[in-house]
Image (cartoon, rainbow over all chains, first blue to last red; front, side, top):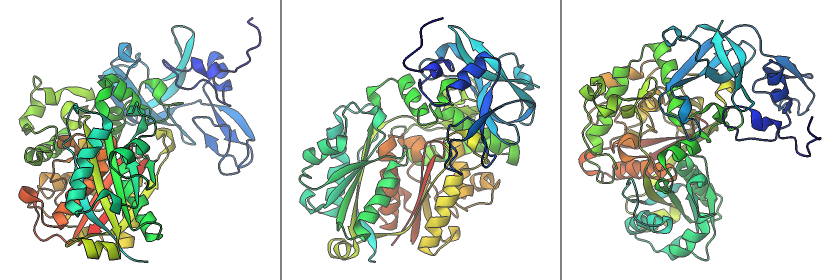
Amino acid sequence: MSSKREIDDRFNKFGRVSFTAITKVNDFVDHLEAGKITGTRCKDCGLYFFPPRADCHQCLTSNMEWFEVSGNGTLVTFSRLQYAPAGFEEDVPYYIAVVDFGDYKVFGRISKDVAENEICVGMAMKAAVDKLPNDRLSYVFQKA
Amino acid sequence: MGKVAIIGVGQSAFVRSYPGSIRELVFDGFKEALGDAQIRAKDIGASVVCSAPEYDKQRSPAGVFAEYLGLNPQPTFYVETLCSSGSTGLRLAYSLISSGLHDMVAVIGFQKMSEISSAESQERMGRGADIQWESTFGTMMPAYYAMYARGHMEKYGTSLEDLALIRVKASTYGQLNEKAVYRKPVTFDMFSDPENRMSGPVASPLRVGDCCANADGSSCIIVAGEEKAKSLSKKPVWIRGLGAASESVNLAGRNLFSGLTVARKAAEQAYAMAGIGPKDIDVAEVHDCFTIAELMAYENLGFAEPGEGKELIRNKETYKEGSIPVNLDGGLLSKGHPIGATGGSQIRTVVLQLREEAGDIQVKNPEFGLVHNIGGVGLYGNVSILGR
């Protein structure tokens, strides 16, 4: 084990390229490592947040608990990218999508394992952890 | 509270790569606006500079411009709402004047996008979305608007052909606009020809022809209080209604994927302030950064019911001769989209229409014009109603 870090920059490991290193919801990355995709829920008002956040704007408290994104959602909309921004060129073509899980929605990529001709609005999808090269972590949508 | 008017408008040519520095670029639009208003820099009480700063090497350009344009020692400052910065500048100018702080304000918009590569520029634009939770997936503006196009097509049966018709209209008028970056004809058949560049996929379902191009450009709008406007201008154009709204940056926080809530809300506010409705609008400039954006604007502004926007373009109702002419200057699709300069360019076109000085694209006897200017993917929305 490495010695205790002075700066908790675990979030650096999230995604192909991370533009954020430090956040109060860094545990999200540990959860990905453990195979779970998580959001937060306000213990005071019960509001679900995905992406997870440290603070509830409704209660102005930080009394949050983690919940796991589980079960099936519905594909709301998607796009297949033929061009990519700097840093993502090697990934094309790839799909980005919004999936509705009822209490919350999730933005992410569709797994390359899903046959392109099967992708359609309304299809049932689930979210799964995606282990990337160089120890990086993300999540993708798979066919439910 | 007195009325507030636009008494001068100016715009540089929008080009792929401006052969000069940002202060020189801004000078072009400023000079035209001063000539139009027949005023001098010393008459201007304050200036508001509108742009998206991530394209600039110069930190805090407002101060640099104030010196170059002869606006010292008057106050100057920066305002930013991505692609709708120019309309936010107008909103600010309105407030500065109606509060009595100033009697004349210059709204200066600019962007010099050519200093960075197209991929870098896409990456920076993508960072106008949620960098913590979205950009990490490799997002960019065309893909976000493509997701709205998909949502609209699924819900309402809008087709790729409908989107192509929007680009064909843009080209019809873009060819007439000497300040537009893209003046070549675009035909409907280009979209069904796999060999043609226009039909090439960018982010499905959007194709090259559905997207506007980056550009360098500047614009300038001179805003004045009622007394000043009446004494200086033969044809002041009055700001009759202003609306502005914001929305969740992450698409996961939204409920509507077939229209922009910011545009709906901003339009409601602007119509209420002006005391008119969509049917009273005689000419409009809408934020067609993508073809789908114009189609959604028809609906979000109330020119058509939700899902009926496609009928307007199919029936050519948004052409010059139609019931609600839209983007007769060629729109962003033809002019190009120099982020901070875009809102000012849209306002300029509507002002020229209301003064009946729009030349080839002049509509008959317009009383009210509307400007719809969106920042990000419906992150910020501004709707401004102008009248004679």
